[in-house]
Image 1: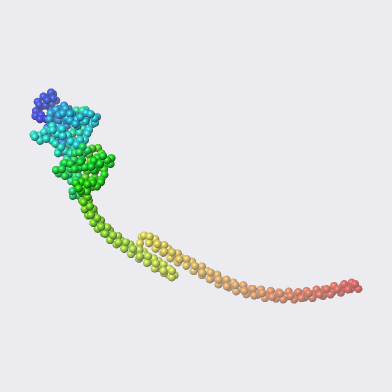
Image 2: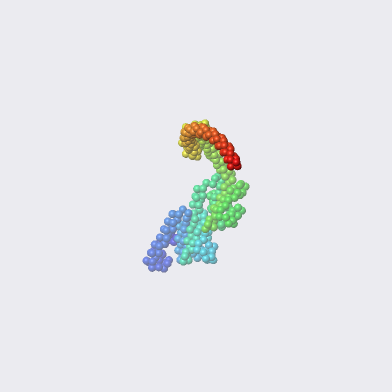
Length: 375
């Protein structure tokens, strides 16, 4: 426990409470301890939880607190920030001044136990709740991402605290110009090639939205090139296999197309020679099937057309025969009419001669009468 309260008398004397109230307070104290211990165990990213109470009692999941820590915490840099700025919570890289008050024998709680901390002020101003983020869990998460040999991954706070996957190294990024440029940049994430300790690296960073920190990564350019080389080999293999498959598919498609085209050409040649007995047969279900059906429709229509022409020809032949008979009859009738006309002409000429003779005789008679009259 945060306080060594070994008996009900201790807690009653400490708070100057009645016996029943002291028992109830002790139960509440134990319940809070159990709750924060369960939270710490349930969430891998929580290293420890500390509660600093204004009434002098503190609770922590690690080591023992010094009594009456609230006033001393108020005098630390973090405590002064909460007093000067009206904020309810704050992310910090560490709370080294507070660590000195957590002891277990000669062991001090220090920054090696956590990567950063979230501090929240209680609503009624009765104390602070401090949650430490586990540095070990961050490192374990880093190990899940294989960036290649020689890569460096770090969780870096804006205050310069680094939690690195590399052991026995405290700082890598914060003293480098490329880190400072990314820190001042308005971009939430980015990458660039940089030089670090004489070698070329790909530097990648990604900032957090609500935490003054970011993830930084350095990947050796040689590692990237070796990975790219492997990818290139795989790409060549995959492309080669794809080309072979594509050629096989193209060959099969081309063979089917050529077979269909030859069949269509053969049918068209027969049609051109006047043979309409061989329609195109195909099992395809693509545009060639449409073309084949079109050619077949043409052949069937030509058959119908030729049949209709033949029928019309027969009709014309019959009509021509009938017309020949009629013409023969007409010719015969015409010959009879011509003979009658000739005979009529001869009769008319004879009648004209007779009329002329009659006229002459009438003229002579008229002259005779006139002479008679004169006489």
